[in-house]
Length: 177
Image 1 (tube, rainbow, N blue to C red):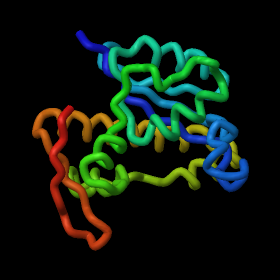
Image 2: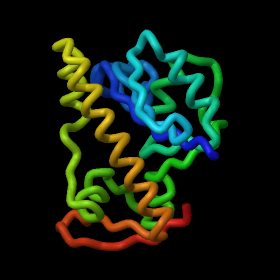
Image 3: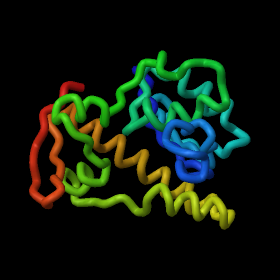
């Protein structure tokens, strides 16, 4: 059985706090979450378990995420000398952007395809970190991983995804995963 690992993480700091989007690795991970098809479940990692997270990603047959090449992997590069971009990875945002020539949010896909919305956003997770609310971050991150998994599986099954454009119109985009 192929081990697909769905992955997302949240950070301790914002881009503004670390001096810009070119310093993503300085944002530091607060919580990372995976769902492994081989394990059949979720796993939550705090910063102290980042090496376990890195090992799980390296063992995956395929890592699936949304903006994980440009963002999540860059955050993790502060913790390892291994170039995570070498891992077999499907970054759904990159694939969709190549087709549409513009970026989509995971929320616009989840809303149009499943009628569900994200429960929070990254800046809220940073505030929770400051307040020591790691459980809230873990729940939010687990939900994002669940949506990522649902979007990937829907696209694989139907060869298309739905999304809402900036005017709220539901549109469809073909996918090849």
